[in-house]
Length: 347
Image 1 (tube, rainbow, N blue to C red):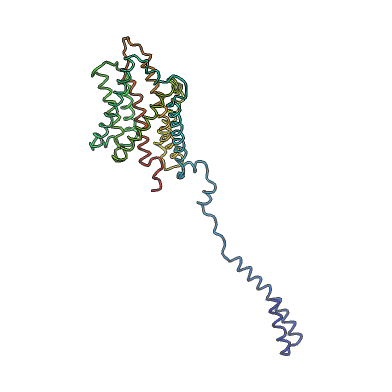
Image 2: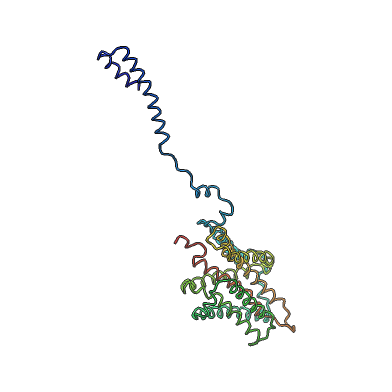
């Protein structure tokens, strides 16, 4: 404004303007200044402003605990479970090397086997024979149910009634099998055992939707895991893992609760993904520990059970425990390979 006045004033004086004109010019300059300032202020006030925060941004910045738990899961929802499984695999490999090289300096099952009488060897051979037959019956039953549309429809139904019926059928057939007395040959106990394995095969029949190649990989991985854990149990001191019964029972309750909670909380929420990871990877670690425990427990029972007794040693009941451990390990490995463990969440 002063520069404008300096340019305008000599021009007016040169044209013969009087003092009154000069006074009017100065007055005009004073009046223009506040008007321009007001214009600048008005332009500033009416200029663009930052948009007000939306409701979504306000909720995002101030999410409650419930909103965070029920929101979508993060990409690292299964990272803790994967890390625990990887750490357990490393510990298992180290234990296999340590006990396999005989560095513990304590009597192992492998050392005691040199002193076993024939009846102890026969008991263990019969037990693992039933275990192998249980796996074969389960696989045949699952394939037969998968190829039968009516039976497959029954096994894939959702709802409370179907879930309760499945639990009742599995628990009922297992209880009947274990309650019957054992006799050599084919009898009532063997028939109940075959029915129980067939029912479990029908329950896992929907896994066949994953495809034959993937299930073959899962079976191979399961064989590697079971073989490694069995080798650890045999090479370790004979009572090394027998103290794990109490902690494993507590862990079983936690895994079962996580599995049941998945009925109401699907893995599409943060809390549901955490529970699914607990059921999947936690269950894999849990039943791996159960396999160590049950292997040494079966060997101990076969060693100390009297040879001459009215109630003979029951290899069917002994095989059911390791059979259930291996079946649960296989199911979880197949689900992880199928993408349930967060491997294919970006696809």
